[in-house]
Image (cartoon, rainbow over all chains, first blue to last red; front, side, top):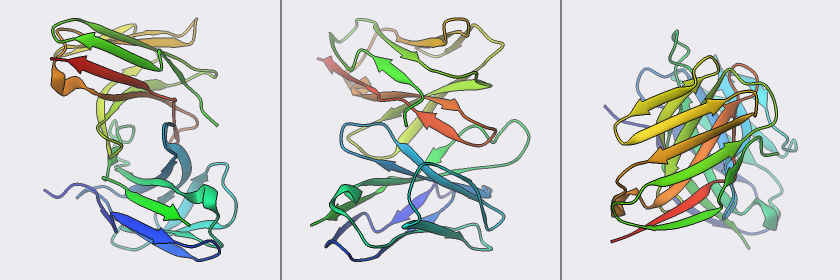
Length: 115
Length: 110
């Protein structure tokens, strides 16, 4: 049973560019959340997707957008990259089944460096 | 913004000793979770405690929750070198949104 997979594992971009990160949730999971983790900090909630719609959003600018596909996989897009966007981006999946939605399963993350 | 704050920020102990880390949060919660992160990669769920529970055990882990003080503690007994990691508490903000604390970096010396 495959867990949460993210691609790519590492990415280097320059300021002003755009980036797309990808996530495939754990089998049987229908909800995907994205987190940004700066070095030495805890993960910060970006947004969550369920039924192909953004269900909740954290305090991130509109440069951060996402998408969820019918197979539950998800993409995170960041436009007009800033140096401060350099971070580890984590995808977490969960299930909306009763008593199961609270537990998050994380991928290994994408390390984004903006130069 | 961070909901939880872990204390201490860093902890170094000898193998076999117990490790205790604390989490404080700001708003009412339905449940609180603890996660472990090795080497800045993905987080792994350790344990969940609901707001109507005061203590929970899982193997060498013991979690307590005091909703009146808005705080939780994670105890790892008989620590091993493999327990070296960062530990985060996470609290729910709304039904489906989890907010993570700043983390405690635990180092277990062999």
